[in-house]
Length: 483
Image 1 (cartoon, one colour):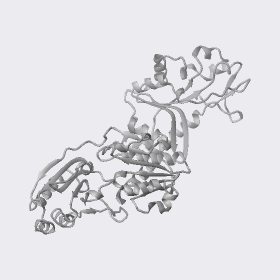
Image 2 (image 1 turned 120 degrees about the vertical axis):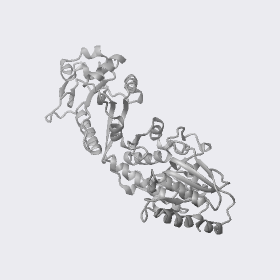
Image 3 (image 1 turned 45 degrees about the vertical axis):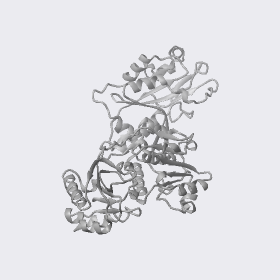
Image 4 (image 1 turned 90 degrees about the vertical axis):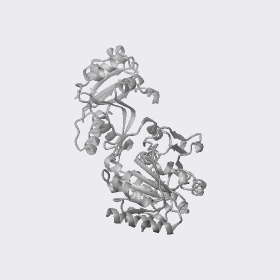
């Protein structure tokens, strides 16, 4: 097989050249992107508890995976040098790691996708060697390194493209970038949902946040549905994968939100064939004495999701006791951006224009029940959430809804826990308890006057209805509704 391990035999020690991000073959990257492919420089492949660094990883939908290694040889150091195929008897260090790296890629794809036949091709980038210079080398180089698999520093764009597509047969039916890159780069993958059954890959804007050094980040800002929670979760995963001594404390607005995030974290680990000691990450709701807890004291990184919902007092307390810990906050307020903050400009959850209905105190329940009945013709009960501006109405409405629909509505409060309950029926809740929830259909029952609907409506992914009622008379009127 071409590009087994190769051993160099030099008459003098090879020169050590400093590694730099500028070494990336930008011309090659441009070609790959134009061809609808993916280009990764210094790709980090995480599988189980191992990390494999890959010089260049390319995916082309009509070809497959191209595995590249960068070789720093130059003409001066190759004078009178030879190269030979490595074997178990040869104890010199190999020049390439192709076989071991390809084996890791195939193991990862097999574990994530169960079975996979994605073709993998190999190439070497001679970043300091021209084609003419290579022609002057010892015959052993030409015997073991055919030029059609070598990319030289003076290679033209057309030549690069021709070599890429000459490595294997062109596929009329393209391979799935989402499937293959989602498997290899699984911590950047968004697991499938009912709204997005194929899953998704983080956008370049979102991926940029993951690459920013931890010590330079203080806050992540973006509108509702811009992917803040998703990014913090994946940032935590990347930290734990790359730093075996790290420990993360993840604070979410409610107990339910923290449990949902933990479940997503575990699901992504399982999907991506990744291994992380779950004792190294703690998900928790806000607690006034959080800095006195062991999870805070042992944390090297503290993340506060939706920090604007946690309260200034808690955030100030965490900052006061921060010490050497890294602190990452997510918020919707761009005014909190500092020099080292990252802002998300794009909204990934579609904006839903609400249907607004004006009712009377006596007719609100009837109108709500009628709308829910209509919604249930095409949706499941667990896809509906009813948010009440006034918590006093929840218990009263629950009895009526359960009786009318034969259901068992779930009342979600700030202390709601998935350890003892589930969300497999219609959800009844209040604005302070909806953190972490995302449900297709939302009803908001509210007085005519309310400060801001934006956050509440952002919990809906398909439809939202606001039912307003004028000047309620308190619980007495609510009981009349039930009657």
